[in-house]
Image (tube, rainbow, N blue to C red; front, side):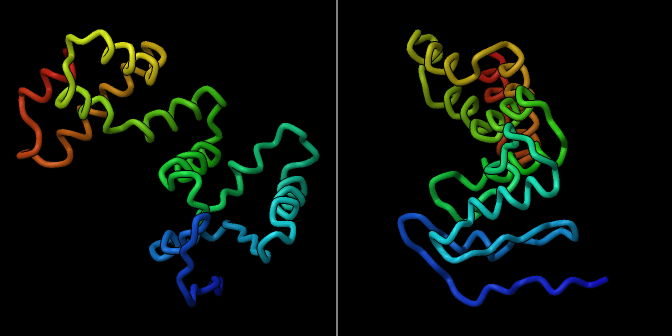
Length: 165
């Protein structure tokens, strides 16, 4: 069955909304679109739909299940990561790790190449970001895979050495 999805007809930009995120958005067959006028109960409607689908659970993370894609207060990468975490049914700790990896997928590479690695402040700043050894290991592997997968010319033995430093 072909679904007639809504079609965007104009762009909206202000301090809260950036509608350009919808330009390349592709709906999935099981997506549910909630659309209301501003300040007319969108959050309430999200809660009603979520409770109808998943039952009366007061701990339901409705904001993560039904994100506002065009809201500029949250980076689109984080919104997508949260949606993926829900679809994959990740546990809260796994969801936090995924979001950390998405948010900081360039941090290790940037810090290794642009900061003094012998400076204790750099080490403390980075430790506050990664929080634990598990996140550090995952971020190191992601950085290596991202660097090597981007372009053979963009990655070098020197950059790899900095990541492992």
